[in-house]
Each structure stands twice: as structure tokens, then as C-alpha cells.
Length: 122
Image (cartoon, rainbow, N blue to C red; front, side, top):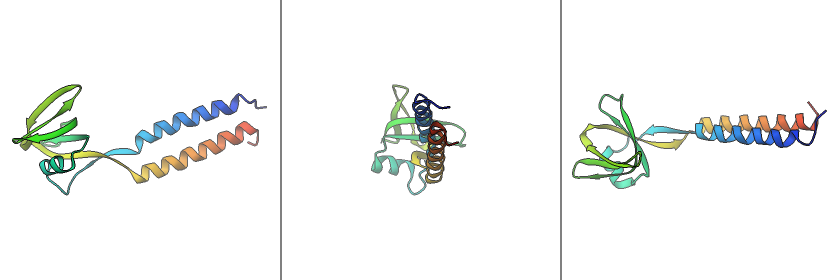
């Protein structure tokens, strides 16, 4: 037998799952069409991930800008800078359509099931 208290708990669970899926829908994707300097100077992204030579080390940089061959930006609340030639590529956060679709379908199914369980139909 279900009570009215079961439905709010189900909704809370669905909300928490929705929020966790939302973060999975955004991924770092490389900017291939422009050089790091051109991309940062023309697009003015709010945040980038700079991947350094060798591709093994990276830094997430907020409010990046380029000046006299150096990359500047904020990292962990501190202004940082480094030679632009050390940046192998730049990545930006973009929505991943496939993950978003799967997440929406999964959460929708979960909400439906929780609602039906709350009503006592399942």
C-alpha cells in the first residue's frame, strides 16, 4: 500500500537523478577549426581547457586571453600565464547530444515508473 509521502520521495529521487544526468551531458570537445590563439582572441570563451604539448597535461582556465604570445587567465582564483607555444590544443565545454538524449529518456522512464509505483499500479 502506498501513501502520499511516497510520491514526493519519488519526485525528489527523480530530481536528483536529473541533476546528475545534466552534468554528464556536457563534455570537453577540441576546437579544431582555429589555432588556440585565433580561437581565444576571436571567440572570447568564458572557459577553456588548454592541453599542453604531449597531450597529457591540461589546465582549466577561466576568462582566457592572449597578449604578446602568452596565454593568460584565471585558475583556482589566481591569475596565471604561460607561453602560448606550449598549448597543443584548446577544448571548450559543449553539450553532447547523444548523452543528453539518453539522459532525458532515462529520467523520463524513471519518473513514469516512480509515478506508477506511487499510484500502486506496479
